[in-house]
Length: 417
Image (cartoon, rainbow, N blue to C red; front, side):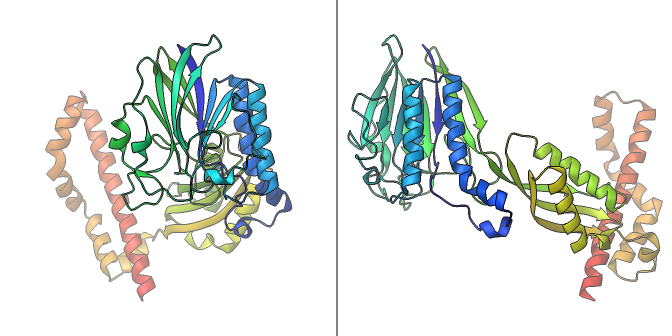
């Protein structure tokens, strides 16, 4: 028994991006905003067809609202029809954003014998569906439950039937896992799910991909960072053999932390930022919104100003042909103070700096840990020469770290003054 299926959820057709004006006024980008969710959904449909999966599970909140616009309805209906034409089964449940009452039979009028099952529309809101392969062999059973209203305050697992032997058991549910009994969105615990002994749980409601959750297919704001997509599950001999996360998002929000401590001037800082962004944005997404968090001790602190932000933002946007937009730059760097300033400083920073300049103080600190270090290094079969080299490196690093600390204290003292 070998088959595969897709687990997706929280498509939210019809939901706009949050704070769109904060990101860009560019007309091309605004148009991409409008089409991003639709494009991601099309990516899902095309992936299912290309991989020839046996069925697709949609775990609630397919629409963002129970009052859907006609365009959103049409997008979903066309996608479902494409899967039906490819002989791919679909099991769709309603969530808190799109309770089953929002699925009008005049729009989603699939026959009872259709491959498309909207749970609760032509069946009970909780039901079991046996899946058969091309040879009419039973391969899996889908235990599914739809929201009948926008809230579901009961523990939903009471409505699920026991696992059936000799079939791959899947639970299809939109729920708030381990959120507490007061949650209005089908509250339950991991132990509740585990007690049913299903082989796989396809959950919806949480937008970030995690254990049991597929997440949303397209992040909508700066809180929904990272890749978003679907889970492609392969089953062999009745056991889950592979669980692959497949990114299908079109726009992606990323937080990027970059330490500039090893850069020597503002131009090398720009190159370091470019290198870091290249590795982060090396994917098929059409657009990245990056929130840069710059850290480290630098000599050119005063040159990281508004002009620097404007120039680097435009350069990165231009070099990436508009694929990368810097939405925010948080400058958390610290000015590296020179030796003369620290030696002349009468405050805490100066006193600390003068202390670490005395080699004896460094030696005393090193001696306190030397025996432990030797045990570790001897286990690695280090020669005496290698150990002496290591010792020198540790002492130099200690002095540099302490100097950075002095710079931090000195800058804070200067601000307070």
